Length: 430
Image (cartoon, rainbow, N blue to C red; front, side, top):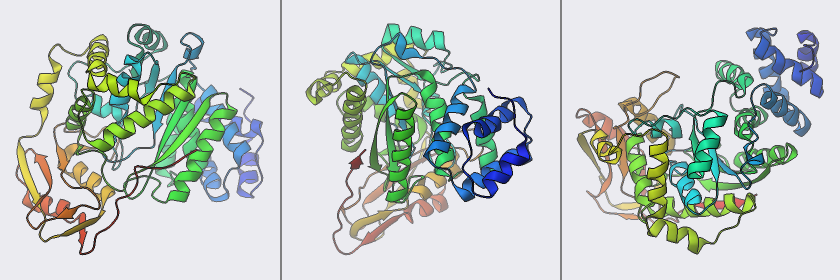
């Protein structure tokens, strides 16, 4: 890394709207790791970047410097055709869990570094915590061993990957600069590209339950992710997908693992199955190993993908008989959420559903918050459907009865008198 440049010169330049050079940006990243930039200076940089913006060259330089701040695994040098997938997150987004074993069971290797959930979305790592005994810690040797034995590796990276991101991510939250697209891109890619997959497919959510609720903002994020990845030498594609309502029927960590297992034996909700198949085709093609939908469907319907998931879970330390234990994890008290009148489901306050589930204990607002893996919501209606008075809208699984909380969940489902169209599952491909 280049020597740290005087912080005040770099800060003044960005404050005044000048494009920063690669060396100037690298000095910020180096200073975040070695401590030569104070939190105040780093916060000032983040705010200047947020207010003045960063162009594609600056976004590339920031991502590259953050990526190089830690380990890079270069796994595709030893595992040709290695694919990866990243989602920007949403309520009920469990797709990584069925996607990886589906591809792996069809001979397409895949690696995914997972994360913890914050705010209204759940992280894949938190969902997988519901599997008793599963050890999610990944290092390069362990990831390589899993790829060689199971064709898939999923888990949490070592602390040596992108240490600059851990520092800047915490300060972005503290300085209200989380929404900056260049900062989001650098944060995602500095971790995602560290494994060295041959290709990555981004599932960028849009709608009320997504971080990028507006379609144009989601499209711009997708473009930046794809362009920056390709410039850094990784083949990339992106899908913009709907998050106007929860994905699948279940929201909640143990329940989402159970729903994923249903998909892996040919069942599960139609939207989860369809999007899993779509992403599987995209990842395989991007990595140079195209696969037909017929082969993917056969792997699900025959139970081949499910058997592969069980083999992977065992390799990562899952307890014997963990599937039976998973069922007993669900919270025992059921609150039934009924429609108070007839109509058509026109809107779901999806983000609010996620936040309410956190309030019920099923998620976290701050790092370190404890999650009740058994608290969950089963959604029994879809946008555009005709609803009868007294019909089940959803069922809430809690540790103790809470009619008041159930009423707040009910308020998230909005009915109208005239039929409405359901949104598409996939809006576009970039």
